[in-house]
Image: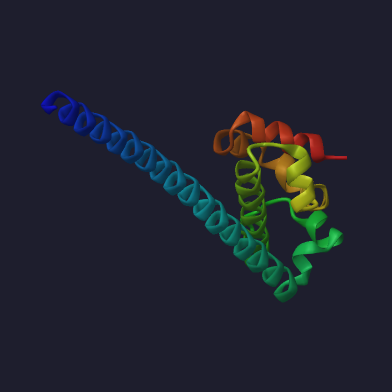
Length: 151
């Protein structure tokens, strides 16, 4: 009889550990999924804030989007307006780079989220005139993506 009691105790203890292990693994997986989703939501909110800031700058300084003004700049550090435009372009391409990373370089997802080609083509002279600096600043995959957007 003592053998049957110890066998029952061993079996129930084993069942307890199996259940505990399953619950523990499930908890870790659920926590990891929630952490990942939380980070994605936070990253998307940060992207949305950056886009809103860029749009507000464009509203505050509409000249930065005008073709005649953009084409008139040959030296991006010649005066305050040229420097503002330079920084504006840096901010736009940094935003596009973050968007590219957020979507893991998946072009269809990037385009579903934002019309990149409009921004890239509006500011393509800046991109092309600063190609050496951009090449140092961004990964080749992103540079290829930007080049593919230029008409």
